[in-house]
Length: 148
Image (tube, rainbow, N blue to C red; front, side, top):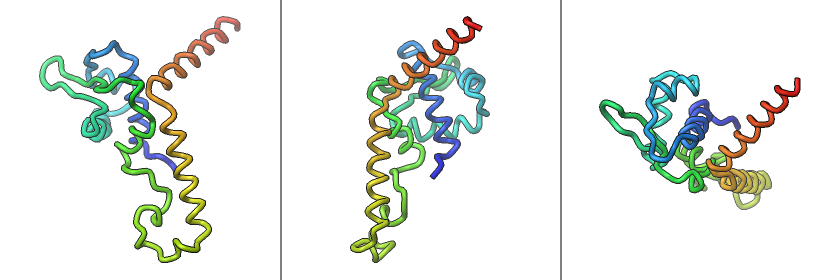
């Protein structure tokens, strides 16, 4: 399973918005430039995040986007589900009528366990955690660069 490019860019964009001062509107062109995404693709990415209440938009002159929720209250699972829908590893986990083997299929149990564990991991990391991790990594890279 590979997450879509839209989800990858959505995570990056939400992390970028979380790094801005609270309630500061960020211009679309600035998001596109910093995240290396086209305006059309950014619009596609942001629509589900706006619908999920993760991002807000402001129209008109000086309009743009901002994080609608506290970064501590938004998880990677929230972003993934906003972009891709409920996390499901196999069709049998989406709809019980898809497969009649659920009662005895040993793979079904493994798919369910893997899906559950993956959801738990993604729920464990908030956007605020991701900002902290990114800042730590950037700081480490700067230290390494100054030592060379």
